[in-house]
Amino acid sequence: MEKKLGLYIHIPFCEHKCDYCDFYSITKFDDYVRYTDSLLLQMEDFSEKASDYVVNTIYIGGGTPTAIPVKRMLEIIDGIYRNFKVDEKVEFTMEANPATVNKKMLKKYYKAGVNRISFGMQSAIDEELASLSRIHSFDEFANSYNIAKQAGFENINVDIMYGIPGQTQRSLGYTLEQVCDLKPTHISLYGLKIEEGTPFFEKKDKLDLPDEDTEFEMYKYAVDYLRFRGYWQYEISNFSKDGFKCKHNLKYWNCQEYLGFGPAAHSYFDNHRFSYKRSVPMFMDALEYVDAGIDILEEDYDITPEERVDEYIMLKLRLAEGLNVNEFKYNFNKDFSQMFEKELKLYIENGFMEFKNGNYYFTTKGMYVSNYILSTFMTCESDITKNIAKGLDK
Ligand code: SF4
Image 1 (cartoon, rainbow, N blue to C red):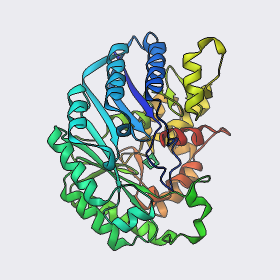
Image 2: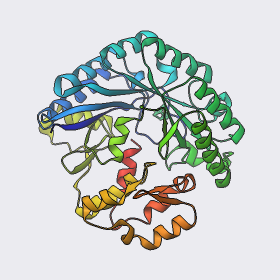
Image 3: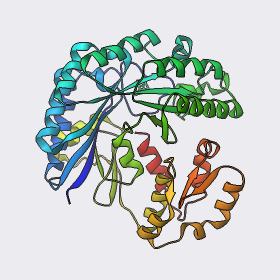
Image 4: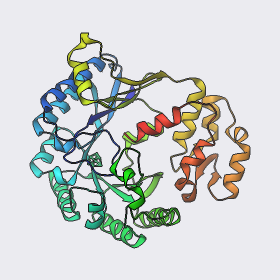
């Protein structure tokens, strides 16, 4: 059987750095030719290793992929098709900042094979967008969304954030309503995290952040509202109309293989996890001056059987359908119910988890505190969960 592969391409450039953002991206960069050439060289390096695979998902993320010149992006897309076998039904996503798209650009990307757009919108309230230091208004987003539709995109994701400074359940309700009225096929709902090293972290005591109970109420309200509008939750933060789950992200949660290109990108390939350092100059130097021996690997390790178990538990339980005990037994010859008898009993009795048809899965209450619960299911002293979680966040 043909092996399937996902590709992730990192475009680490933004017009402006949002105050809460911990993703690896830089501003004030203009050597896009050199960056594109480096990506192309890296793809060439993997072309042969991946020759047994068919690429069925591609995800160009960032940063802001729509902030780089169209010509460069088309070269990157061309490089993907030149170096890898791409399934004709590939799901091909590009992230977009609503302030950096225009119709001509989106038409070209659609024609080049991109068939899914993911808009970072976050809120429909301009004051909330300003508090996040986003560079667009809600009207600009709505306009960009309509432009994407006109350019041919039918599969569109919109990111919404809860826990924004000054946000209330009512204002989140307004955002959800505005977004659902546009009828995107997919909605991602993320809680604001105050990450160390960001301007938000520096001023966290001055931010008008909702308390934990309010934040949970917001999450619960959003999950219920999205269900009411026909969006089925298939993962802690992801909701879709029928038939529009994000296949690329599902690869992460189903422990399937993907290759990442660019600084800070993560890969899981041939039972091997690796990621690159967060430095554009180092990445370009390493690819350009091959003989200089510049090491761009941040992590590089084979997965031990114990880590494999932990990884499987952590990723499967993020999904709404949860972890199936028969599959777990088949994969690891272990009894999940017995391994965590005490914990599972406690979580089920307190309404954090349920068990049905052989599957353990989180309730909405459990999803909200899933990070803590998942940490209690880990079997070995390894950084694997931390690393994977970091990788999934970009
Ligand atoms: S949130 Fe998005 S647009 Fe803002 S700095 Fe981060 S990657 Fe760039």
